[in-house]
Image (cartoon, rainbow, N blue to C red; front, side, top):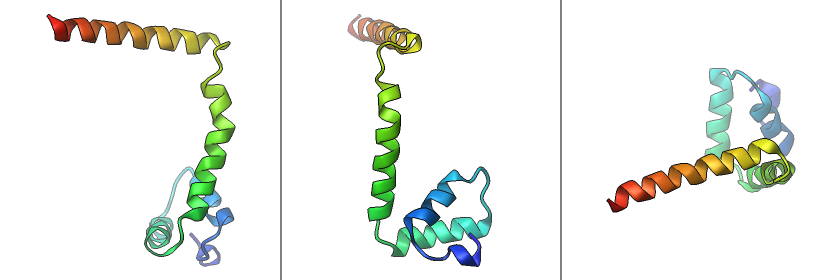
Length: 85
């Protein structure tokens, strides 16, 4: 992060997580954040992101949701039977 991003704030953490590519300085900032900052901002950010994405993850009306669940169940059934033979 640039010298203007040395503070530990929710906005700085959001800016870091939105980056497509990070510099060595960015990773040093993140390491320093993990070592010295309170993790409340990170927990709040993760919770907000989860709450925004969770309706899409559990929408049973989406065709791919049903298809994915069927594939998972099929693989689990195959694995279970192999283990019991």
